[in-house]
Image (cartoon, rainbow, N blue to C red; front, top):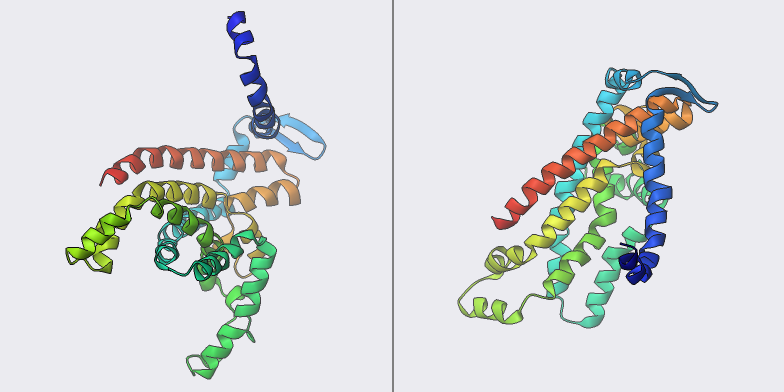
Length: 293
């Protein structure tokens, strides 16, 4: 055993920083959070062991139930649209012939991914404000009689949150699909064209089957990321839309940071972790079967 350790010592040295990083910043906080969830805890530390009491309080809290429903609905919308919509710019990138035009389009769709959520929300707020571009156009076309206050209308809260997230990530996901399209043999497309296949037929029977593995990857990444929706939801929260876009991550933040109830916040975070693990397990079972269809 010792000889094997000495023989591969350099490999262990290489992976040591990664192991230390995960141990310090992932596994230790995770274990500490699960431990705190069993106590009444505040800024002063642990006060009283309550066992599963925090979990009972969390599950009986109407705000938590509402946050769970919001998280699942928002995650579903982000996952479906965030997986399918990037196919359009990805295929467009593959079809654009001039190199300069393709690079310009690629940069344009990727830029939102580099912006912070504060900037993203600022752009959408200005565009959708009562005196913004969208309301101005709708009023000029006489489609509405009065400006729509999008960010203070509960019915628009979830669509706006989903739309912002998809818009921010669409360029990144499109580049994933585009990188996969680069490996598609052009001779196959040319042969299909000679056989009379049109553009839609080539997309349906050649391009989409070729992209199936990447579709599964983007689906899993988008689903897991959307379950942790925090920044966009927190920035959009207000008195009128809180019931529609309060997510589990924001619920845990409010209980822990704003109300100093670290025990209940840890329990809420543990439930979110369990939800993510269940979704990951289900996805792992479904994704391989979907790829074979």
